[in-house]
Length: 327
Length: 260
Image (cartoon, rainbow over all chains, first blue to last red):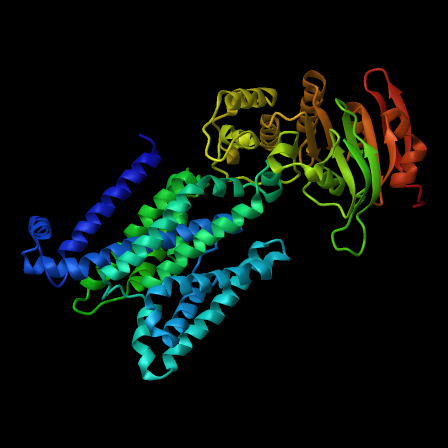
């Protein structure tokens, strides 16, 4: 069996295990068989609570992790920059600010939040592109501009915290990403837009591969570079903004997961994208599950746990592999 | 390919190419030479449609290259650039398969034609034994040959190369030029190659186009183009032109004519 296959199998099994553990542990504990029976019959009080509260939360974390990880992969491919990530270059914070503003002004448009989110993310992405285009998307300039845009939007977002008391609770939820109180309504939004984005990402994986060549080279192969860039960026923005709209701001996943994934399965996007889906889902689910169980009944936001496990793990992986990706 | 009055500028203030008119002979191997900054690579960029000229046209098979569809043009001409990037863990064979892109529709699988073309490309470039190697494991010479293999897999009648011998040591330079000349003579490829070394251009090419200050100042066979006077005019270097039974015509620079 190739290393790639083993990696896929291991992560898939871990993901399954994490989902099961996550479903059965917490403030209400249910056994595995009890859970299955309860889900089928619907007559177990505890299981009904798990179904209404814990299950949507798990599904939302899985999809959020997958979406953020893949948006990172896509942005790195399209900007030819290994440090590109929706969180780093301001797409997530742009999405957050715009959706927040719109929902604060028009609270009854809640279902359209992903759409406003997308507008905000697309706006941030457009700013990054247009301001670094003249440098030929020079990696350092692009990142600096992204960081500046991120700072601006983050600042705008945080200033909501200091407004009247009314907005505070909803804002906190949106910018600090706690997966508590996720409902089947969130699952619907996330499932619809998120899976759509993920499917599209899988479909453009060979485009991402071609973009790894230089623009000139790709162009001489008859490849429509600009069109591919636009489409892939749009998919990345869609994924990042839906994840932000539903899951809140989680930095670093789009950086962490793709890099670990490249070390394990190589830089071929046809393997990298599906693997990042699994790994991103696993990471956020694990972070969220730990977050609600370690210090129960207090909850630690998934985004915090994620960075605490993720950071050292990435360093460990990088130190272990002194050779090129995928070796 | 015919070039008619091509003018190009990067910044709209100064023209890097000023009305270049030249013709590329079919089945010939043509060198573009000239001092640094004379517009050699820019001219090649316009000919490969990487750069859009401000005025003038490049006509290929009776049709302006601007009028070709991207894939249609990619089936006519292939380009090997001076600097090339690819993920280090890509294998030689997979990189060569990128050359089949212009012949494939979006989601099509590899066809027999694709396999044949890649076999041929790897064979021509002596990479059959290295097909499973990763790009990051290759030597400089091998790496340059992989990019040529990619271009060959496109199966185009025309091949452009931008200073393919830069950064290679003498052995790899000669190996590469012999390979390119073989492609020209045996397989009838029309080749345009940007070169720095005048002696290499003289030894391996049928035609030489000399660029200076954004203009094509001379075009002809090596014997017509390379004389002590023209070299002095173009590069400001005094040379002696010699003939040798084995090496043919060659030049030796003797100084810049400035007093020490």
